[in-house]
Length: 400
Image (cartoon, rainbow, N blue to C red; front, top):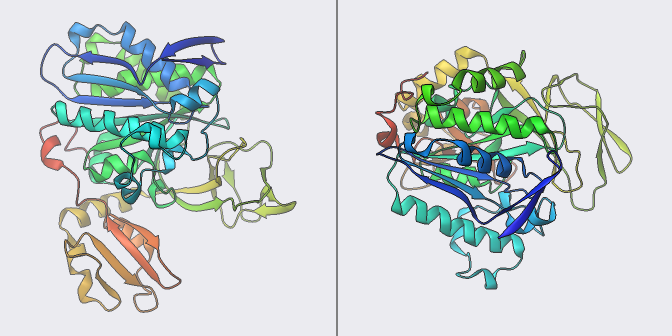
């Protein structure tokens, strides 16, 4: 049991790894919410505790789990100890996790060991469909938004929310827990509710939790203040309720002195040549027109900022059709493109030969990229592991 403090509420609560757990009154989905995987983001922990305390449990179908993330960091109000707990969920590292927290290399890995065991236990002892929600806040002011690995399952589910959707962040972040869950085939995405210490962030998280319960079929609209929750989130989004993709990340190098220029906020438009930050005393300028995304205004973290652009609706429709008919299976007849693995889940692309095929083209087909050298990309299919059969009867499944 640890004590977590909220600056917004000027109040502390005690929590364990499982913040709360509801066993519903009948069959239904299993919802897994995580708050505070970064210790300086306690908003989700407070929102989860309050919602699960006040909801009428007799009206809930299925199960709901509320999990606290980095307990060590939450207790101290810091992002992490030595390693970002949301950057260590790579397959090879998971296979090498110690059996005991006592054998962990640092406090963050000790936390990962416990979370991994809790998630595996939930998945093995409960029935699906499973939904995973990762609750966050940001260091700068922001309207609430969703970060989504671009599988069709995720896309179909998340369009129910009146929120901006950011696709493709998994190409830029190594080892987020959402990517690990998505590669198990489940619906999983992140929600950013606002600035770390704003009271509105807790309220936005609560509204999101209630909406998620309804969208999953865990509780009926009539049993919560559905329209109040929906309108709360809808009113925050203004003119940015679109689907965006990340196309640039500024990665802070070891020993680099990075500092954002003051005044930038999420979704703010920036122009080519506009000064955004300073690196070792030299100005960093925007490389193209777009919108700034998640500018770093805290001491910990390696992503200085991202830039995003809106995805036209025609491209979203086209990508759905291309994935439905699996046109990617024909790509290897072209020079410079071949399968990397015998299961045909991953492509190896030689850009010297297949120079006409950009990353954006492979995004349409459902692939995410990782550069392995100056000329080669590894493209991994987002759709192969999706457990569509477990969700096909859900009311939202036919969403486009």
